[in-house]
Length: 63
Image (cartoon, rainbow, N blue to C red; front, side, top):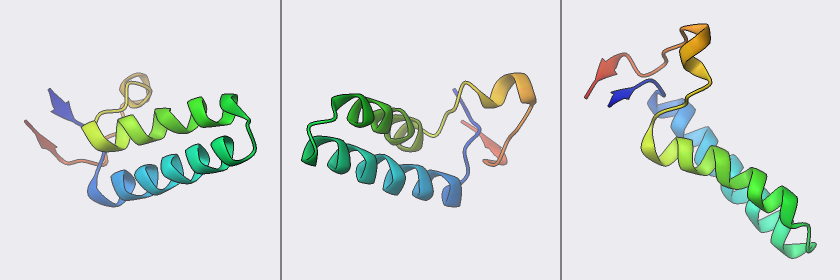
């Protein structure tokens, strides 16, 4: 799979995802928690499907 999310981008996504999940669970807003799972997963796996149509690649490598 092609890695199209760079290191800094991945770090920001993981931090943002965890923050949204914690916020959502703290205030019983499960929609926000589920939305937070999206950047968390894309940050962990290093692939963002929304980058493909726009030809964005912050990863600069292929695996």
